[in-house]
Length: 353
Image (cartoon, rainbow, N blue to C red; front, side, top):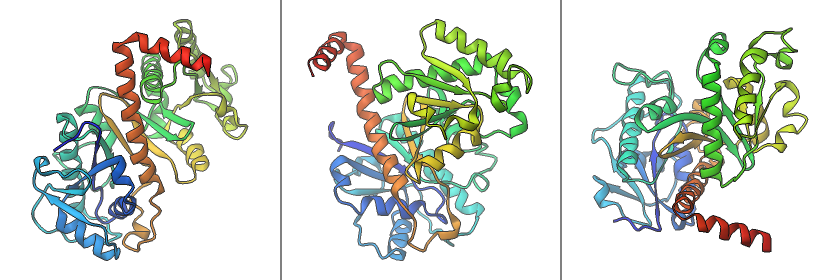
């Protein structure tokens, strides 16, 4: 079934009333993608065929009932459910939310079992996925529970990488969540991620301040002086190249971010507004810090254009590319860890070059 050199990319279908299915199909209309990986869409082949017809796509789908039936070089659709589902593009539907969860949890289980190599998730509606069985704000929180490690949301677009200390929590709760323990944990996670997943030997990390002007030496809030600065100092003394806290208002506009391998923001909008402004719809959301690889596009369900065939699939395609790149980087890192001589050989080759 599975060849060692072929990467199996599992794909959760997301909200069927949104643009997820469209960006998935558009990504794999390019047959060259199948030279890089073999996709498995966790959904129902009749449903995906219906969406394909709506888009006037001539893409070939291969329905399977178990991973044992997977065919390399085909666009596989694993039947996670059998019943028909009513699709109404652009509508917020609780039933559709349940199918998004079915797809996602099935794909996560396959990832845990090693039946797929990486997971790429299409957008969900965080409101309609909530139920007694699934009480998570989104993908990241569920993956943090199911997979080993400490999840960290890391937005990526080429050399721009923005991570978050806190993600989906109310703004008025942010300050109470930011502790020395949390900062240390997140910085250590991103430091390890940059090494093993992005092949950066000595990562340089910038941490943004919580308050305006990083607190102005305590004039505008005490958190930067009493919590953030002492933690950065301790980590730096241990050998982690972390710097800050930097005033967030001018950090990106001045191009200061270009001096670092990653930037950590204190809260969601502090990091994602500048990231999405700079990434122009090509960004990818990577869940760092886990023992498995998961990426997703940096946009939502986009109900307003769902079913119209006009969705930009760039971000989803980049999410597939990044998952593949990280898979290779992580395997190389593991191999080098087992054989330290390879590191020396690479360093010698680098000096000769």
